[in-house]
Image (cartoon, rainbow, N blue to C red):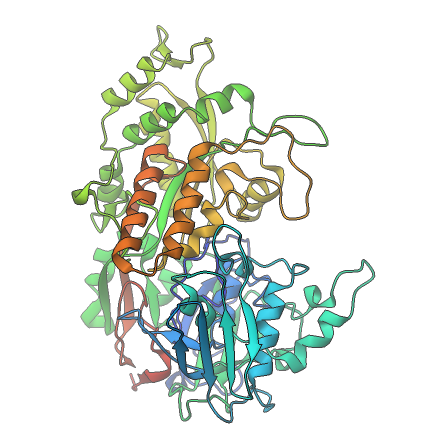
Length: 598
């Protein structure tokens, strides 16, 4: 899933579905109050938002966490941007673009006199460099996977036509072509090219060590509307306007401040104390009534955009492979037999009371989720048109299990056909996302009603990622992804070779085959449908293929989708010009926003 240049409050909302997982880290927090900001940044000149934890890198190609993408989203621009209300593409670094009648060529024309934040010219050579960098197999980046075309997974070809025009050519029609090429942040050749020519002691390009969080901020050169001005780890980022931004005199707000907080609890406290200008309720919709009562007094407005993008799900580890070093299976074979039984997964889906989740955990401000495609997307296939759903019915869940050979002992505990007690562990990152912890606790209780013992634990996000990416040793996990209108952004999740194919993760690129690893026919069919949908340029045909994709995911349940909150954000009245939407949020048109005195 591409998270490249996705930002939490951006002038340019990135619509590609990207893998976004909320990170957790134990950080000592130093408050960012109106009295302790440096650099002469006064309240009247700054908009204050927040992020959870420090970023891991300042290199946008190498980002694997949402926080790094949030931080960098202000600094880099693409050829095109997306209107946060309509999701239509609009010019940014490119003043225009043209698609050939065969749908296999697109030519972008850059604006004249573009400059980087350091004053150097931004040219077609930078665009060419950026994409060649992404296509370089030595560079580990998920951006490359979503740009591969068709079943052959070919990458586009690039051609510099002149000093302002560059042409992309693909081997077959690819529906998200313009959106992906246009939405990719452009990088400075004059800064980064030498790091690709030089290798470190291990023979790897020095680029992999470039723009770390220890890099002096004046060396982070971009073309976005803001520049990094100050970074205090564990405390805050301060941005200043880019004097060489193409759309002068924008942005109209002088400074952006991102406070680095340890949790949404802390963020809520700081919003209520007026240290933050924005609070995205997201997983904190239970605080809606509290904040709603304070709207008039504290001079803010809660915007409701309807059902949010994104997905929350529980998944089982379907990997039947073994660790090549120890020859031990990633998953206990007894449990693996349960997890790979689709009837077991269907029973679990029926046993989870999602309406209670909506009522209790989201105080009614959410909906049951039934699809891997976001509800605001035009490709969402709703249940009323035939999408398969799993209504809460514990008795039906029990019948599915007993019909499949499971049985209950005298204590109403579920046993498999071989007499093994059905018990497994369930993990999530609950530290900075308390709702996930509550979801896990409810799932534990729901499954106990059908005789299944669940050992639920909230763990550090980095440990969770290590289990997913490296050890592959886990039973079940609750996780969430960000979403958008373009389903192909999740190709890394659904491709059997994708680096986010977490529920049955194969070998990483360059690694030897995993002993015993298997890909089910339905997994391959899901990937095939994703590719077929990307090849359809006729919108009606494309929607039909994505309907089949969603139906197959619901039938096989590699992910058991749970609930989706409403898109709710509390925004201070001092921010003028907000045009809130579920796909763009509150700050998608950041360049045009202004601040008024309190």
